[in-house]
Length: 554
Image 1 (cartoon, one colour):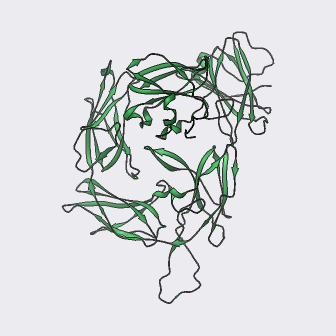
Image 2 (cartoon, one colour; image 1 turned 120 degrees about the vertical axis):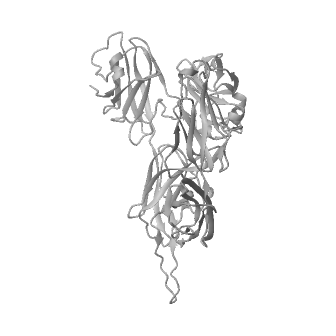
Image 3 (cartoon, one colour; image 1 turned 135 degrees about the vertical axis):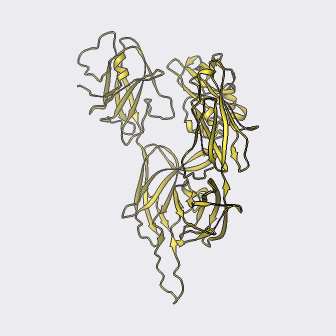
């Protein structure tokens, strides 16, 4: 039986020929074969037309792709000796790079000797999970075109939050289905974007205004606020149904107020106001007019909830911004004042230190919001001049994260300072009065580290985590992850010099590291290292078992 090759990279063809070949005759002794079968983990049945990607384990990997046949089998032939990885994907299943189909375990590395045939590989794919249900109104009638969002706990800036993920709209019968989920815990929220709701009033008095109603956000089963949402545990491949909602129509609320321009303002142009519902991760936004000369504003009817109001204007040729966060209840809010504050021009420099520093020049510095305030304007970015200087114009007050680069190929971020403040490890808060310069320093020579992971005296596959110590522990960008090869060997490049700790896990989800408390139960298993620039002494690690120690968080 012959297998078709879907794609092969040009670079791959230049070095060796790879294909999915019929095994009717043995391959030459100098060439190897990697072959196997892909099965459904639940039913142990073969999976047809799964996409199998074979990659070399190199600094610049090269790929070839084939499909499984009706019996779930695949084969790659004419392979030179080397190290390879396989990745299996199929619609409706979780992708995997290890035979067990467990995304927490490291990808399997296949060490192929000259002329060797590895045809015994078995990969089991887990079905994706789904959540489904129906959305009704308070009278039990189905609601169409309601947005249902699945939310998963994540950590942002060290704080646990529910972050929106996949969404679906209810059909004409009020039914929805959220698919493509992996195992884990989820909250589910429903919200209608159809504006006002017509609610039946059997009695009315002449001249009395008709009350207006709307649907707010409801978190399963009946919570109004995200903090009270019930988390649903979903197993791999599980289909959970009957996650149903009954949305009550509640009185719509209004908010109104004034945008306050500076007392000495001359020319005022381009005044605008946006209102964003924060309950679903800033996904719902609307624009509201503000009328001169007093720049009063009034919102349309809104569901109760948490909102952020962002006012912007150009005053005397300079951009201004004002921000207010409000909790809107059924009674509404009036007399809101949003003072406009001037933006600043943030000047600074980027320098490079270390061996060969003169060869490297940064090209740009940019800022992104670090305080969840929506930014509805062009990116704040500046090119770096030949002397290393830069100036970013129109930076509003608030918390901003810094991106600068490119970092030297084997280098690292050495420091970032706004005046005397260390903004590499602390938040950079910009105020209208900020005049300090932002100074960024790159080092040309990061730390490198290698070692081995053992279980007893035997090498073992593991995921090795290099965690920074002290004030850098919360800096997710400074963590490094490495997967050991079949000999238990690992290697880190471009690590930040300084105090760190090594952990070797049998299985590991990189998102876990966002939780500032995740590593605490494992601290005694960590191996402390002091990294210096360039190569460091090799390390030997013992693997941490899958089951956490007593008292550890799952």
